[in-house]
Length: 433
Image (tube, rainbow, N blue to C red):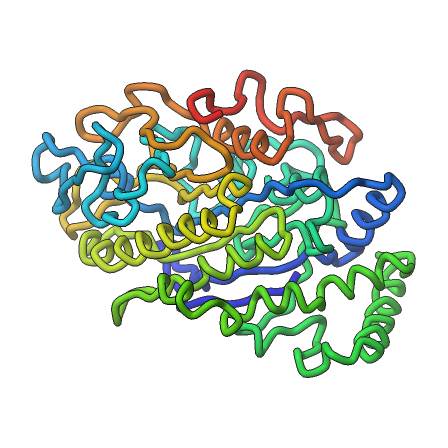
């Protein structure tokens, strides 16, 4: 997996830092996802088809649902907070005042105010799997949705790796095993992109690249983690280092007029990674996970959000607009959420604390029935009072959008026991499909 840092590090209340980045790939420590996928599709003679993709925007730290999609206009100030609601292009739908661009295109958007099933845990596990990290798991552990999509749907179009995933806190492939375990060279931006110690200066020399990979093969073989290489391994490396993927990562090759849509005011957090995510989808990826912002606002909640929310509005609206203009919006599902919501009552530090009992979810594209708000919370925003939506139902909707039926699809854990992707009764959200 190729890792591209995108902006500054965020610090959460548990003392751990998270640098926002995209990771491109999927090479395994003891095997490779891509060669097996290439081989399977070659043997099956899979026909090319219109590809469905997902972009997951993860807001690490837990964003305040009450200050984004669920402004409590009639609640006392200590619950309502400092922000107001504004009307959208859809009659009767009101959202936070810092989303004026999204408000104008709400017919292409949807929000869930009543998402449940999350944990009080600074971890993406429950959003990536739909399960609690500390609950009992099948042999090998639950795989993330990105790994499942990569396994079940195969390589992306044009040979692009299927899974472009956030993984510093990613739950990983679970019982899907080492072929889906990310291999993580690091680097800051395209110019520093590395692959097992190889810089971009060397990527043009394929023979040198393969020679270096031979050394990697021998090292791994000595640990009995990989049997060897065949033409599919070489093809996989050709894919990883192809011009198509590298071009997608190079924003200098973006139309300047389009890139300008992602410009934010000075001092605001950069959102050009949203443009990069779109370009990677257009290059053929099936699943892109993007981490953005720092949302653990135990103090100065409104000071932080006054800078982050307008930037988020710019990035999201530009992403949706661009996907529409390039004809990819109907085939690309966008989901944005964090670890949990924030407390209804503002604390003494003018912040909001962790609130796992309910959170907000934003969705767009994917052929979904947008232009709506789903579910409601109570008067102070602390409980899901109407139409609670479990995280697994959101994931089931994303699976549905890429062509996977959670009522039928099963994968075997390490004990050979078949496992469904979601629990019984938790299927796609009927309002959206």
